[in-house]
Every structure is written in C-alpha cells, then in structure tokens.
Image 1: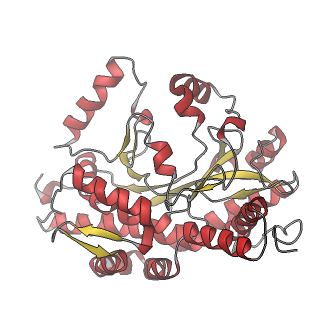
Image 2: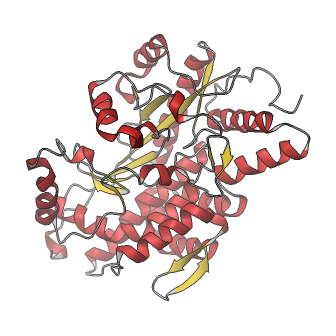
Image 3: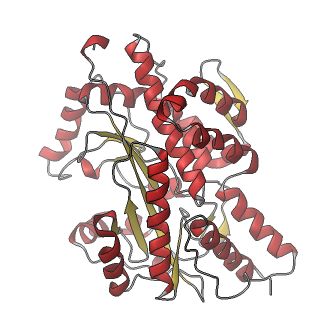
Length: 394
C-alpha cells in the first residue's frame, strides 16, 4: 500500500479492564449481588458491565485523546466500583488471577452469550477465572490496521512482561509471572496472530469459520492482538490487568506510541521486519515465565538480552511519539516498572515476607489479596479502608 494513500490515524484510544470481586472478610472471590451491578450501572452507565463469571466486573473508558483524560476516567471507574463494592462487603482487585480461589467454586454470569460460551468450552471454560486489560487504538484505515497488526506483534511480549499480575493459581505459586496466558491458550482462536497480506485475506480467513457456523462474528477471535469487530481500532489483548493505575497507563501509553512509531516509519516507506510466529512465541513464553526480571530475544541479533536493555531501545524508538502524544511521563514510568518489578513480583514478595514472619500459608495468601485491594484503589481518591490489619500481620 503506497504511503501516499494511507489515511492518517487519529490515535485516539480506550482502555478496558477486568476486575475480580473479593469478599472483604474471607478475601475469597464473591459473586456480585444484582444490586451491586445495578448501582454500578446507575453511576457509570455503559462504562461498566458484567463479565463471564459472576465474580468479575469489566470497565471501559470512553475514547480518549490524552493520557490525562484516560487517568481521570480510570481513577473514577476504579474508585466508584470500590466505593459501591464496600457497601456490599466486597472490593475489586486488578489482578489477572486470584491468589487462592478455586475455579470449580465459580458461577457463570446468566447472560446468553456467557452461558453459550460455557456450554461450548466445557471444562476449558470452567477454568476462565482470569482477568485482562485490553487497549484499543483508533486506526481508521482498515488496510493500515492489518499492516500495523503484522508489525506490532513483535512488541507484544514486551508489553506482557510489564503488565504481569498472575503468579498464583488456586493457592500455588506457579513460578510464572503471567499464569493467565496458560489458562487462555487452552481456548481456541487465542495466542499470537499470524501474518496477513491485507484486509481481504483477513476477512476471508474469518469468513471460513463464520460461514461454517463455528462463530457468529470476529468477536469470538481472542488473539493477543486483533482488529476490533465493533470499532475501527487495533485491539491489544495480551496484557494482564495492571494492579497499579500508573502501571496500566504506562503500558497503554507504550502501546499507543508503538503504533504511532510504526505508522511514522511506514509513512517513510519503512516497515518492521517480519519474524516467524515460532520466534515471536518464544519471546511470548519468556515474558510469561520471567517477566521484567528475565531476558528476551533481540530477534534482529538472534541473541538474548536483558529485558531492561530492550525496553531502553523501545523507549528511544518511541521518544518522538511520546512527545507528540504528550505521554512522556507515562512512557518513562515503564523503566520504573522494570526496575522495581510488576504486580506479580510484589505479590510473590508479599507472600514470602508474610510466611517468613510466621504467617500460615492461608494467612499469607490473604495478605496478598489485601495488598491487591490497596494497590487497585490507590490514587482513586476513594480507597475504602481494610477491615483490619493485613492477614498475618496482626
């Protein structure tokens, strides 16, 4: 596609987050009472909705032009849900897995879409006790959207590493920073997308399943990155939900800047080198396993490099774009995440500290939940108080 025929994207963006709801006494997952959802809908309207499990809730910002605007929306959404949930004895946590809840104890939301999904997926669906963060970037030209999807794939493991928040699964430290992806990849139509020559090939591919009646439309494609079926956006879906508000905004800003950087290069008739999905998936696994503390492949050199070094190179690449979008502070915060660790690192550290101080395994896991409640609502202006001291710390 000649660069002269491309429609310049607006690069507006929206952020979707999914939260678990926990009981403030037991710290276990708890289904949202209908009255809680009614109150959230009354206050937040279409920016909040139920999710697959009754113990989950999803929010979405409006389309934003600046990250100051996005921060205001996210803080209000987290804070309002936290405020309402407190009245029902529960709290939201922005973590992709719950530290100790069991999937067989969870109930599916009574909506036709979710009930049909549960019926179709059977045992795989019953394990979907996971939450994520999705970021939409408006790229109005469809052909350009597919072109950028091919290129953005390279950077998905880097975004995953910065967002990791799911080290525990059903009371066990999995040794992974993002166990959520292990659960998700058991579903069909997930994982790293392949490369498409353009819109026509993408639509022909999807139509094979639609015409066979396997899926109704492309909303049932759950790749790490996809053209949105509902909006003229490129939707990033690989990331865990970030516990800290600042981390969520940083990861989202990186993604928007990467899209703009690749468009800027494409306008100059340059394109990011395409690598086999086999190699992209190797980096995906390494990000899932080791997070920001590990190494990823520099595929251009064919060598492993510390994540922090690769992040530094990305920040240099997108410096012009961060300045143009006014999100230098959010982008710079990625270096702090890499240096200090992600939610996954803090969860494990909290668990180990509590165990070392004499807390039981159960108390330590509850202490992780307390940490998640506190961090999820920090900076929202309405952080509800804990019921008492963190588990194992009395």
